[in-house]
Image (tube, rainbow, N blue to C red; front, top):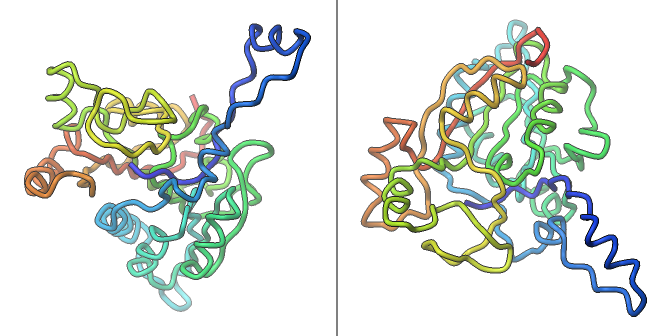
Length: 275
């Protein structure tokens, strides 16, 4: 999957690394961090349009149309907007609503600006998003959570900026996609999973995109519910990287989210405390 450029928290150095740094001699050259990886223009930031359309339609039904004097425009934050292509697709469906693209990467925001009416630099970590508590009616969180070291903290921050009853529309690759089940039986690394930031090992494909976390439908439901959301529905979407000969089968698998390529989760922020 293609990553959204929301920087994950970086783990602290190990004790062994600290001891190594204290030894005499020239200082070791620092390895590129995850922020450097996601800031690399060669790393893709756009996902498939069909997935974007499916999730935007779910959110449009939840928000309803804008009606003068009756239903004002909703504020929708596309958190981890990348190059803005998903937000631009959503804008066609969410007519009249206010969409704000949010990303930590200045490079991504420069590319998003021509596509999204409003773009804001912000991070899920290091102080949180630059929005007041309860400021948003909905959050799009498209192909972000699989790139995060601390998804719990990210969901806590999304919950903070959402008003009570506000909508979370999240998408992420499915670890238990139909072809991954076959690959695991054959002893092959599942699609979407990566063991290196340098190159692909042990699975089909050649593009490294920095996935750190992968969910099944059940695990995603439980994770989001534990963060203070009521899960409304989980549906499936196809993966744009599936070979052409298998795309009909991949679309058919969307009827059963547990085996679909992409998980689309719609949840609402509860008024109580997270568990």
